[in-house]
Image (tube, rainbow, N blue to C red; front, side, top):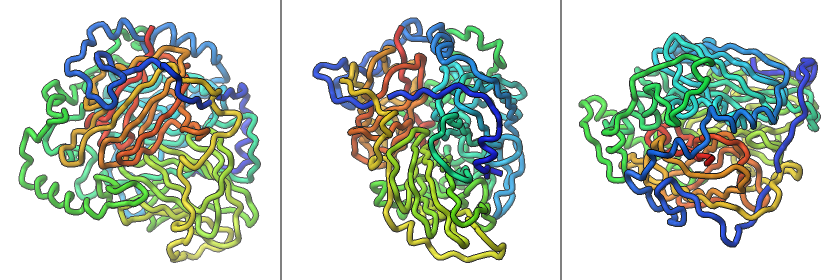
Length: 573
């Protein structure tokens, strides 16, 4: 389903505009403007936001997702050939190889059908919602217009059951991306699909291209669902603060033409002010679970102890999953990729998991990393890769003769998944653990951005400090001690070079994702939109504020973000 030959890729005959990539990294300025949330001193490293910080006038001072500034930026990108798609989100039965499960998916398949366009195309996609809950669609990694970003209550109203929404924007930047909901913990069901934006001036030469989507799976197994898992982890503290605005209200006070594009949806809020209050740094459980969930919680906590990884700095995750999947298939019934000896293959790898980092290797082969998060890097050879949730890597391999496992380890969780590469034969093969999994391992901090996508050296105009806070015991994940509040803003202005200092003050690793932008890792590092932050580590990332609107910053562990580890970067007028 996800295999496409290079000839087929180039034979589509789709016209496209040329791609334009920004460039990179600067050293700290002598007196940069400090940036913090409204009512917070941006110089107070890690200081929690002042409770009740004034935000009454915030909408008037910030660019609306539906404002003229957003429309003007999209006009500068220019419209391209229109590519039309339609997706239906629905409850369905899925065959994941080891068993059939009841879950939610796009078009009754997991991953959802690949969306493939050429840089410069205009994507026109209608999402029909047949789910029992409101939903949205987020375009992970794409630098798109703000009102199409798919964050309920911030950039659009949630799409209610039985309604539809029309997403339309220019896909200007080539790369490997993906789509998923941004509503509650829906991401941890089957609602995800790859999005590939091809470069019309592609410099790489290869014979075949494969898209590989990694996932951790619990939905529909033994009565488990992501919502029940979230309740267990929150120990009765209440609904997800991440979607307190899912009642259909809009935080910026303006829907403008949104009603023309989609449904005027309303839904019951998933959190109340009281629920928010329980998720502060001093939060404790406010409701005792029933005896059965309590027993599950105890069992899960006992099982959590062995979920350790040296690579991740300790605790590897909060959720034990019964299955790990490659392209929707468990190891009992893996997908088979076929090639000829000597074929040069591009593999686009996407981690769509909810709570799991994956270590990936192709048995018997070395990989050459060419891109991460859609942006080219100085080519680097490696035996294995480590991907946090939301990260993507493109690699090239030259195929040897035989049968080989594309081996995937759920890092620190003692389980695995795989696909199979074959040049001949059909008979099943039992594979030993590939030595490449324990060989040279590459992470993003060891990569360098390709010369043509490096940021122009420049001192930052503004520094924003975001300290990740919370603990596994209290389950009070937040940024700067303050759980997500859609009225909170970290202000920036268009045209600024912004440095975000991510400081992990917790005992857990977090993959941090920024919407609508890419940032540069230090010292000429790669352009990324998602970066893994190890416990008690800090990383400074630089970005150019060139895409106005209101943009989420959050941990891409869906259970952490939904309990509060999210905030908003807001462009001031």
